[in-house]
Amino acid sequence: MAEFPAPKDGIVLTHFIVSDDVERSRRFYTDVLGGELVREGEPSIVALANSWIIINVGGEADGHARAAP
Image 1 (spheres, rainbow, N blue to C red):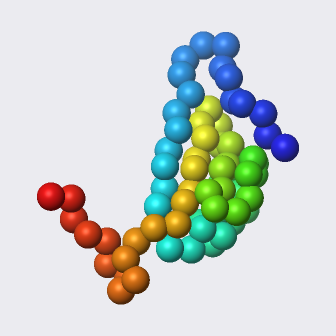
Image 2 (cartoon, rainbow, N blue to C red; image 1 turned 60 degrees about the horizontal axis):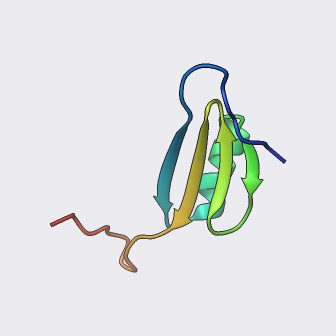
């Protein structure tokens, strides 16, 4: 299991991704980009470089996201 990617210098970023297919998105960040799975399920968390990528389910049932007001 990945540990917190605390760098000696610089910062750590957290990216929040909303996906209608969390498993597929998680596979992209781990299998394609080489991230390390920290937490499986919803939300999934992947450690990649000096960042956490949090992937959670979202979106509208018709497949269209609503624009912010």
